[in-house]
Image 1: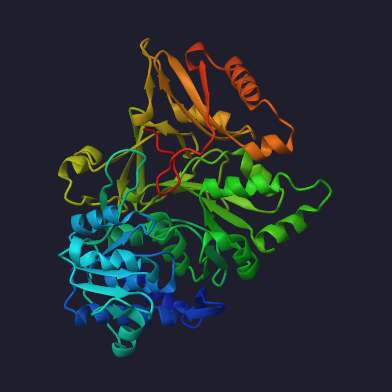
Image 2: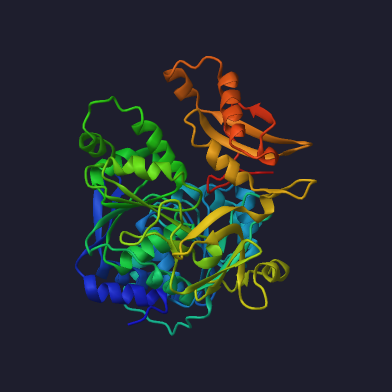
Length: 503
């Protein structure tokens, strides 16, 4: 049966995998388990709570890190016919209040770590009528705790869901400009799950690590994994990432390149002679076989490096506006350097070198931003991604840069800074790099890997970086050569998805 709504995913996974473990997570020092039938029951209880408070059809926000309570709350909202607003718990209070107001939010579910935010809601967000803490230790007078409400509202719930009605508004966190509320429907998300092909058996253990308010985590890590009967282990903190790999021993994990690169930097210094199998067991728990990568460019050289440890990296591509997956490599059909083939429900067309996408996963538009929506979606229904790329003869998609980042020289030549950054970034001494136009120069600003330099006895870092630039320039046409180098002592400022802010 086709998947048209998120409820379809919950119901069908319950029918197929009812007594299997859907989630494992820490509750203080204990590891708790929830079955697929628990997920259906608990999420329907959340829907009943919304019905009790007359919040059906309203905009309901969630602020918190990954947790079982966050997940069932999200399901309870969208499966009640309401609209879920997942927000980034790392944002400052004023930014969160602005987004809550802009999204016309009527109620807020919040993690106890966000108590200070919740205490300022009445003063800053007058439209919010109900505050509900995801845990049971509420300290705000007159408000509610989710566990207590669930005890009082057990029972079944089913709403008549319109697959083409907006069920989620997700705010982007781009490297420039004001965040935009991406309006996604049940069909957008469900069709993305249905058309993203992976070869994973029911019961396979995965570990969710990425921020759950992002579409990549929510759709690919949670919804997709549930649709195929995975056991999803929730990483409670990046501080416990290594420990949890040992504890949960996942076979599959979704990561962004920044995390993969950090792991690579640790593995590359492994003493020679130690068997790779022993290193992999110590680093990943012993069972890890597949890393799905997305969210940014991944150095293709890392794919071969991780294969030596028995781990396959499969790179994909997407954006929130496409729910989010546009293309992906999978276990039986992949090509190193590409971001895979477009999903069956995604029609990809290259228009003036820009990747444009049409299909059932493409958003309805940006919430209350008609001008920005018109710029993104053309009259033929194609979403203009802003990414530059091409399709090869086998149908694999490649990304070459961002359209808005193009450097246009006075002689008419165009330079994609990402192309140059990706080449330079392969050098172990370069931890982060940004290429840009600076007057008449093409400048590379570099944050070196100081630990690598110390370990390898590199005393004059500036000279070594200049040598790297000089060697780079030998293989480049004149107009792509870097003529200015700037070295920095601290990391670049990044957005909440850990991408460098370019301006």
